[in-house]
Image (cartoon, rainbow, N blue to C red; front, side):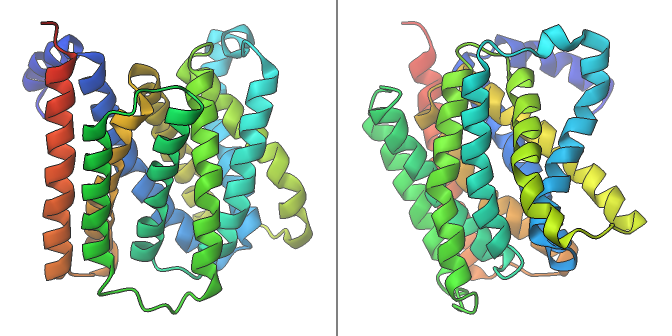
Length: 302
């Protein structure tokens, strides 16, 4: 986008309602997380998975150090340290399971299994955060999930065996972590939450990384720096989305990640999307577009 077009687009984005901006932040986080997960999968196949997880979040801290230095530590002090520690512990639990499975589960299967997390989040948002159970949001989520099933059902080989179940077990833990994040946004800014996530996850995952420690190659160090940057950016986008709108609004948008994963696989591994991918992608796109337009109209004052 040219500077002239960008200058015209920025006021329009600023004029959007909170729900529309939350959807845009969620879209951005999805692209970043697909890039992150694909890179981490490659690294976890080369190094110990727990070491990979530790270094990913350690570089997340390093990426934020210049910002902390410039603003001062006081700007990153949380309102309550207990919530940040709980979030870090729960997220680390999910990551340990995820990293055990990730070297053995294909990227498409990994993305599809991750789509159970939005359903856990929507349930938790209703029961624990007391968000309204809006039927249209659930309908969009279920239609999007059906689109996911259309895409992955012809390609699920079952070769991952028990590792698919281990990755599936990480979904409710990630959902719990994101629900805690939503609660934390009521007291802390997104950049504070993201910094403390990286700090706590790095701390809690260190004991699991030490037994099989090995020094990465220069290329692997560069890949970890890349993961730290895009992972931090992705979590900032995600946290901003959670701050602006109900979690049940943003979750159907996550299903578009399957489209990004297909494009990533085409660009990196030359995986050409099949007919099922295109049909399922259209279903996903239709459901997310519909809920985005509906929520945008719903947010407008009468």
